[in-house]
Amino acid sequence: MMTAELAIETAWSPAQAPIRFLELELTNRCQLSCTHCYALSAPTDGHGEMTLPDWKRLLDDAPAAGVSHVQLIGGEPTLQPDFALLLTHALDRGLKVEVFSNLLHITEPLWDLLTRPGVELATSYYSDTPIQHDRITGRLGSHRRTRAAISEALRRGIPLRAGIIDLGDGQRVEQARTELERLGVTRVRVDRMRGVGRAAEHRAAQPTVRELCGRCGDGRAAVSCGGDVRLCVLSRFLPSAGNVRTTPLADILVGRKWRELCAKVPRRRTATACNPDSDGNDCAPAETIYDPDKATGFLRAGR
Image (cartoon, rainbow, N blue to C red; front, top):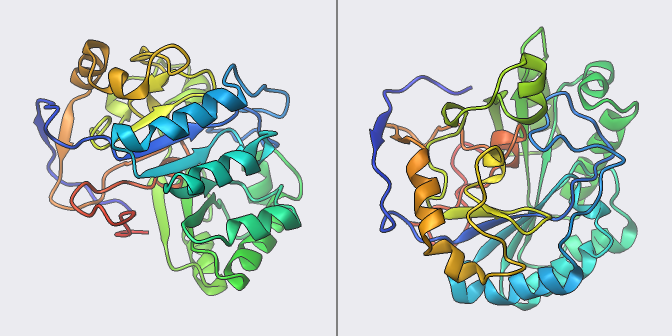
């Protein structure tokens, strides 16, 4: 669980960390309707305005913009019709890829693709009891299918991490952590629910920058399925810095709007690496923090 630390707020500086990690929201469609979803994803939602050529062009441009790692997320990224093509294209461009998935839609060809070098998996898990997990996701049987897919990923040797969002109300968080560890998941992270997206609707409150981790735009950025560039996937309530369908990513990341967005978020640094660091209320779960001081890979601490 996260511990309280004294946070120090600082002004953002473009010299802090260049963008190395890019979250790509391939779709807003998801088989689940999680009560806390930052993206308000649902089974009937669409895949956005980004076309296959748009996504490919972005992946082509990403290395020149300094990006070395991408996370394919959604919604549920595997529901995007071009998911396999985009994952392959990213790998062919020399990018490291993490797929953040609920693991309900992994076909045999996809399993084979996920075993390629340079690919990692991440998923969310909510309880060791099916009835509680399924109530949170809004889909009967989701616990059984996700649990079985976790075991299959580990059997195939695919690097996998899991995250648990603590929604309170008697949720069996520690039991879920214990179950994951018994299955063989060595990287498990717990985070609180963030007041954005569907969680904000339930609270009947507008999201604020105080719900963000304070590292937004620091070494990372996000691109929505509409092409909008944001500080992270949690920050969609803030304006876009630009759109990659009309402007190259590298130009957006050095532009005035990007700097203004970064300045909106109070900067926090703690004595530990344990920040909210969330990609949604798939928060720490969805989040793979790119550490600019460890440019060889994803930050593992606390996962």
